[in-house]
Amino acid sequence: MNKQEISIENLKEKALSIRRNIIEMVYSASSGHPGGALSIADIITVLYFLELRITVEEPNNPDRDRLVLSKGHCSTALYAALAEKGFIPKEDLKGFRKLDSYLQGHPDMNKISGVDMTSGSLGQGLSVANGMAIAGKLDNKDYRVYCICGDGEIEEGQIWEAAMTSSHYQLDNVCLIIDNNNLQIDGKVNEVMNPYPIDKKLESFGFHVITIDGHNFEEIIEAFNEAKKVKGQPTAIIAKTIKGKGVSYMENEVSWHGKAPNEEEYHLAIKEFMQ
Figure 1: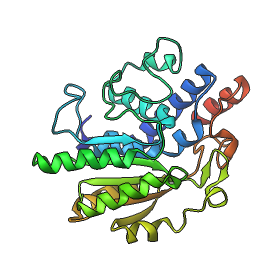
Figure 2 (figure 1 turned 90 degrees about the horizontal axis):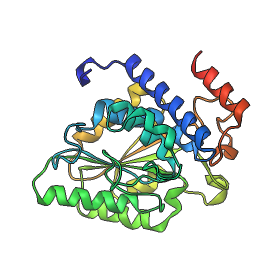
Figure 3 (figure 1 turned 120 degrees about the vertical axis):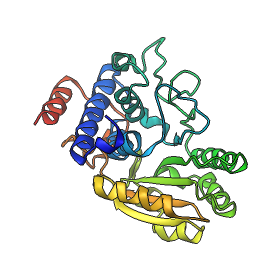
């Protein structure tokens, strides 16, 4: 199926499969971070099946678009998308976080086809994305670099140093995506270390800012299309999302930031996906 043939319904089906595999992986491993992985499932679906210029045949093509999953603890969303796209075998997802598996808790670019950056130490992703974008400019390449950060992650000071760099070098080939589900490991982000107003702060750092519903496929697509038209400055997409989206008992529950469902909870989640 090529990009021209992909409909909103196709994207919804892909996102559902990605969510199902997120739960399968975390349950099988008895560990992981389902909440934040589920909240970015729709965004990562649009990236892999509509937006990113990538091919399974040439995963390291120098002209490809890049994705940096800065919130690397949500690797199950990335692995599920890579498997759905054909970069890795779907049966390998069962090995998530198991001994001798290449699917570690955080993505490793040296072990996984299609992974552009080893990540997990929060706050570093935008700096890496900037480096990739600057290299693209120097090499006269037209690829784009996408970076997904968590809203709790942007409490890290390095993010704001990197934001200055994005703007200073007019990196219009950088697209920062903030997964704004308002929850982090210790609670609500506005109570732990309030980052709001995120949009005004990023605008003051020189970003073109777009705010969307991160579960509305039409809005996600429109935002990426708008970002590609912006010249002379980086773009930030603030995606308003729901942590645990798609599993009723996980939605907006901070306790699901980093734990696996038990057998009963697992079957309940799978049942919901089938409705």
